[in-house]
Image (tube, rainbow, N blue to C red):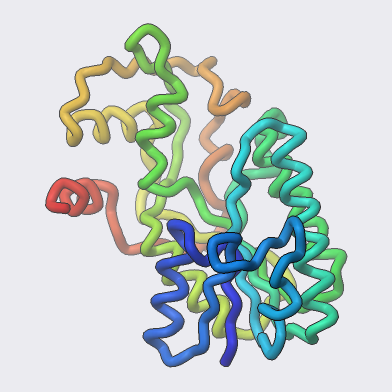
Length: 250
C-alpha cells in the first residue's frame, strides 16, 4: 500500500517512513527536501498519485503567531485538495494534546485550525493528538530560562518518546479511519518543573529550577489538565528515566 508521509524527513516522519517500509508498505517521504511542498504545491499531485493513506506530520518552520497559522491553513488546504483529487482513502494528522485548552499559544491555535480543516474536508480521517515529546524537554527548559534560573509551573505533563508516537501513528495509518480524534501519551504524568529538573540532572546542567504556579508555558498559565490526556489514551511504553539513559548511551 502506498502511504505518503508529509514531513517525512523530520524527527517523527523519518522514523515513520522507516517503520512503514519495514512492514512492507510503499512509504514516500514527502517534504521540500524531496521535492514535495505543501505551501507552493510543488510535487504534491505527483506524490498523491496512487496513495491510499496520507500521514501529515509537518512542523511549521516558524513560531510567530500569524506565520504559523498561515502555514498550517495553507498547507492543510493544499494537501486536502490534492488528496480529494487523488481519491486518498484515509488522512492521518499528528496534533497536540490540549491544544484547545491553551488559547494564548499561537502554535496550538494553529493546530486547532488545522484540525478544523480536516474535519470539514469530507475525507475519511483520524487525528492523533500526542503529548509533548521527551526530545523537546531541553527546549522547554531553555524557553523558561531567565538570568540562569528556570521558572516553571508544577502542573502535570505526561510526555512521550518520539518512538512511541511513531508506533501509534503506524498503527493508526494501517487501521480504518475513525473520523475523530485519538490521544497518545507517555506512561506517567510528572510535574513540569520536576520533569525539567530530572533532565538537567541527567545532562549535568547546573541551572536551578524554581516552581512557580504563575509561570507561563509558551504564553499560557497551566493546570493539571492542560498538558495531560483525557480518558483512555493510548500509552507509550518508554519511561522518561529509561529514555534519559538511552540518550546518555548514544
